[in-house]
Length: 359
Image (cartoon, rainbow, N blue to C red):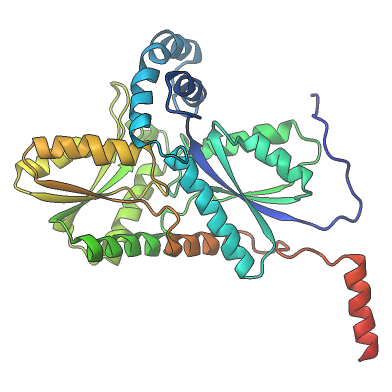
């Protein structure tokens, strides 16, 4: 195996630690060509679509990438901001917030953002950290609930980078944080703050991203972890069973996915007399196409067409201060035993020795 050229090893260099916050990814622009490139990488991942490679390649390149990019580009255009993709902007703000929080606590840790698909790519971020002399890396996926389709795919990308690297930094991976106290507390605080500012609807719908049902039967813990998050969040909000419902969104293709589905459930609520509905998406830590367009626009429209009066979308955690605190708690708990401060250089050691001698 050919290894890429790497920075020269510096004997005696101080250990440096980094945290990489990894999200799914986003097109570079809300255009059909950019979306086509993004979808080719995303849907070409065998972790995402578990269909025999040749059959799926023919479907993906023969049908999907010819039809879907233009439709998806129009959806992205409806949520795009002057700063760019909401997902990328928010994830960067989260990384910046975590950096500031760790610095304020006295920890000298580098925090970077990376995307599983698109830019900045995981390999490019790892190359940059290697050039900075980073020797230990904590990988924090933006997915609170573990799934082979998301979390494992992120880990695959790091393993693939490591296979091409001679001196691999020490790596740690946060597998999941579906029940982490900081995460649950941040979700509850976000919803309470929204209710205090905007009022509370008759019912709360917790919508998680869906995956094919077969993944559950194959051993994926995602379904269970989503339900655990929902139960803990309902307990934190002191909700009774009739005050909330857990659903799954973003179904793709004709296969059966985890149920109940979000949009049909919202419509059923409207038909059964629920006039106002709050929707929160706990499985997304940053707002994106699936929350801002699918929930806030598509599901809201369907709900009102079914007889509902108002569907209110409660934003994701994003860069809320309570979530930055939760991220810091999570990161520090997984970096135990690692040096979080730079080792003193020769001059500072001599200065400390001199001060000791004077005393």
